[in-house]
Amino acid sequence: MKTDPIKSKKDLNRLKLYFEKKGNMRDLALIVISVNTGLRCSDILELRWEDVYEFDTKKFKAYIHIVEKKTKKIIKIKMNKAVIDCLKKLKAYYGKIQKDGVLFKSQKGKNKAISRIQMYRILKQAAKLLKIQGNIACHSLRKTFGYNAFKKGVAPAVIMELFNHSSYAVTRRYLGIDQDEKDKVFMSLNL
Image (cartoon, rainbow, N blue to C red; front, side, top):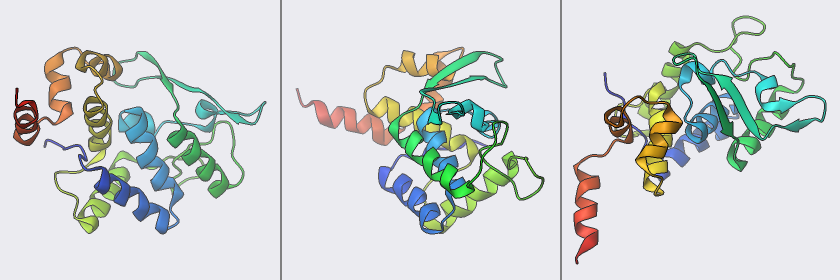
């Protein structure tokens, strides 16, 4: 089933605020890191503290370096202020962290990340409660990254490269360009 990006910044902020008000820093970080990196949920859930934090200097790294599960390609992602600020909150929330500790701890198992199914449930439940339009699921966060990059004027070819897509057709589907988006182009020109 096709998932949709969260197109409304207001809805995205409501989603983040929902988890923040609940004091659920893990799920807040899951949202913030996902929409700011564009990583697939399978890669997000594999993140460990050593991927984002330099234990020797006690500072957050500038980049996340990982091997994508799906493509087996090495990717390098610059962490922006929103990601680093959220990771600081998550670190404080957990208290003590370990190099090989997962970022998104499950309640099941000592150092086990939440499952993709649990991530799906978290997003579905919050989207339903907040009445966020569209089919919101795990992949929606990756699509939200692409959609917002596109809206900020990032060239589709660059987004395609960031996503490691093999064709522009795949990237175009991710961007969630619908008739409303097309209509805005026609209405904005008035040449």
